[in-house]
Image (cartoon, rainbow, N blue to C red; front, side, top):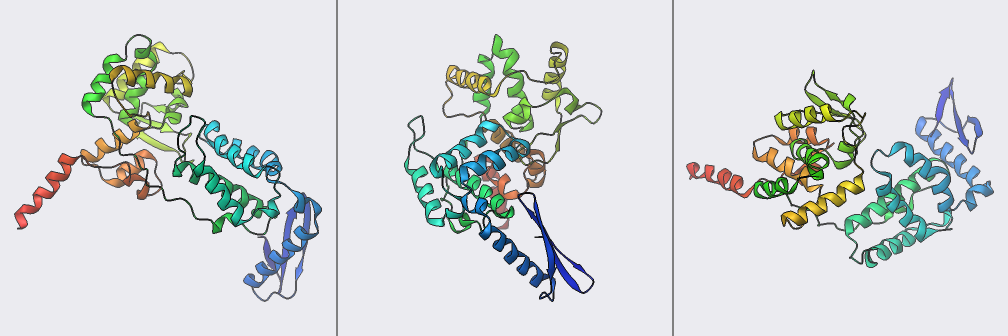
Length: 336
């Protein structure tokens, strides 16, 4: 909300659809009253504007939200579009002003009760991301004066207890490296070594440029991150050897010239050849964090390297190995 005080009087000044609305608020005695009156003024403009009362969610997505998302989302577009398309398909031509908490609850139930394209049960975490995407759309619509409040704030998310605790064992790592021969040795092996030694996300590695490798400071600067915050990751010996080898062989701007889909397919093929079950590429990030924790790194250091903004996210990646837990409890015997 835009209110400011000039002299002894408060004034409002806002725009809707490139139309500017401004004037005085003689009734306001303080900033809180001025904001309340400005909010009422926005509501009055909304109520008498036929465009606002007829704007549908799919039109808002096409004209406002998705153009904004293409600029502001740093992670792969396809993952975001899957959630956007789910929202768009369900609400279709529904007017923004007509979306209610009950409709959003029906959307939540519909998503959790329908199978994926592959015929599998949809996970609560996926549905919660659908709801998060819808909430962001409605918040943006509210902030732009298209609706007066966000109805999704009254809808509870699903309980998600499906946190993966899968990490790569040293034995499995040896098996994987053993099958990374031929074309896989040049295209997948370097990315694999980087993943288990830096904890970088797949998209972060595939977007990595040689200009992001700082040999003077001996760090990799990760610019395109999920959180939008730039971070630096130290280069250890295995990573340094891989990067120097690639630097001699590849002359392109990017460090890795492989698409996300090709990498996914290759990793599936390699895990099958190695006889490794239920391992995803993202589990390599989990492996890195778990090994770092087992080596004695504190949660703050791990969170900083992984790029987490709070320790609650780091906790799910730092399951200390069973032997380490036993050693920790064994130290208590001297007090008994």
